[in-house]
Image 1: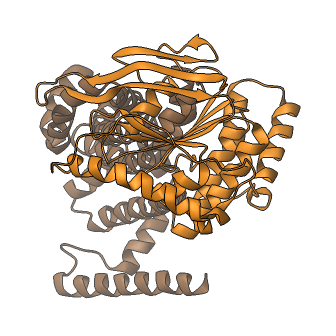
Image 2: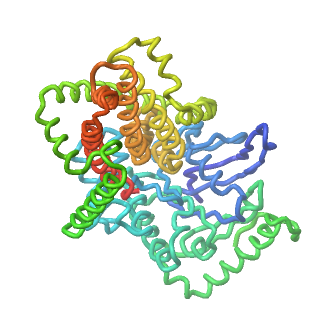
Image 3: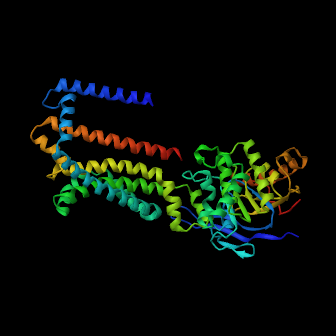
Length: 274
Length: 245
């Protein structure tokens, strides 16, 4: 029996009409339950509301309808304690060096200096950034900058980590290696992870379950259970089951992507798991 | 480093040669020779009365720069953070930026009277608009991911301005301050040229009245040397800030 850590019930998000644009129904209704310590990925066609889903769960945006709970408390338009987010865009602060970037959140939380130092050193070491502690983001590659962002999230010891296409701007090899890093973070911290991605192979490799979203307004139309063991890594890519999962995801997603492009497809499938 | 120094030396030599050529073509009526100008500049630098005028000009410049930079930063920050106010103010500021400010000088003289305050106001009027525009646009275009990160870290709105918005906007704001520096100096000098009894602008106009080409060119040379040196330092700092982005 899954212990629910975060839950969305009937969540919709509608952007109201403006003088130049009509109202946009971006998301939902979405019903989703994340188990404690689970790695859940969401894939879906471009513009289906994946990032909106992440923002409402993070408390960065208010849902138009429905309710969101995290650790049994309702999230109401404010970022709850214990949630960390890594964005696709490079969000490392260019005016701070790597150590200062990683320490940023802790200093704002006014933690004792000794604890800040201890947590920062651990996060730098964990993410392999010890040798770059004094470097500025402009001196680092895209992959390294994303490591800085993950380390900055890690030091706050989040219990729910939300990642919005964090490796979208990286090359394939770096993405695979960063995926391994992410799995290591997940295993070590025991946090619940929600990953938004457009890469089916990434979702299939990293996740316990993958949710497929429909074209806008995005709903979860299928949830695929992968059945991987907890100590998995990118070598799964050569497993026969990996191909089956990716094919399964693509079959569902292809229909929705065609709809997203304005072409017709077969009617959406009912939610199911394998 | 040596190569850079050599490039600067060659540039200055070429400029001096061109100046000498122009002097030979136009004669004493319009220009003084580089040699005469350098001697006149040295004479000015050792004259105590010259330094009184320098103090007057740079006092006015200091006050004007403080008002333009401080006011521009505050205004730009406010307009950048409040989208509607920024959208309303931007076309007004752009129009004001392109308006020849000299047309407003009679009005400034009527309001502030002759003297230091009019020069300061005129200098500040030149400098405040570019800082405001640069700062407003820099604040508006701060990477949204930085702001979301701040919210995730539960940084308060006030702390967000000082720990995220301003540092992120700093390279663009500094570019605005560099433009502000040059335009404020220009405004103060123009103010002294048309309605003042003291300052370097007044000295230039006085020398023009006496057809003392040598002094006009010597003061211009000293002002140009100051402006180039100050701008070079600011440009280096500007490039350093932009390299971090």
